Length: 173
Image 1 (cartoon, rainbow, N blue to C red):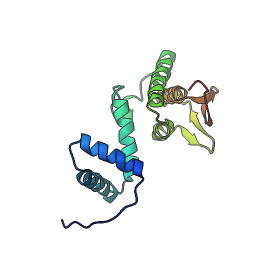
Image 2: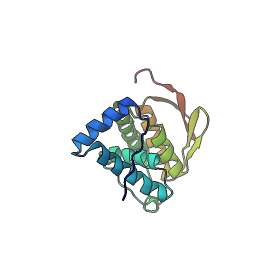
Image 3: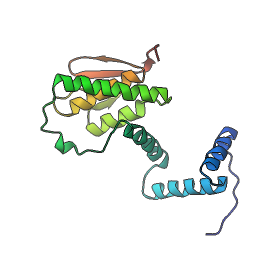
Image 4: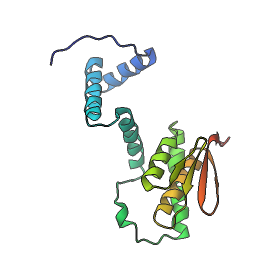
């Protein structure tokens, strides 16, 4: 493919980071950027938003350290979950939230993705409302509450809902 030169305005800090990254990968800056852009173009040509896919991949990478796997919901539907399962799900979520916090990652996009995929999340301007259902999605709701608390968000709850205040983070975080 014929190459053309094009000048792009990129923040100096980003250029320096790209130089370090490409060197660590054993690539030239041009080769690294070419591969990055080609991958982004392939995603975009598939109708996907490349920055979102990269964000999702980052979350999946972090979650893999918690032994997360993709799992069909249909296999969970007939399982009866106990109160102990709810507690364990929340504790597990708190570990994930703390990990995100320590890595300086805001858990809000992950919480939204998880809640929306389970059909239990309502986004409002200043908070997220998570419904406590009577099926397997309750485990997901409990995990979301744990992620939010572990990431420093203030949560409140009733018997039916968990509310995550997006404007208030705990002072201990």
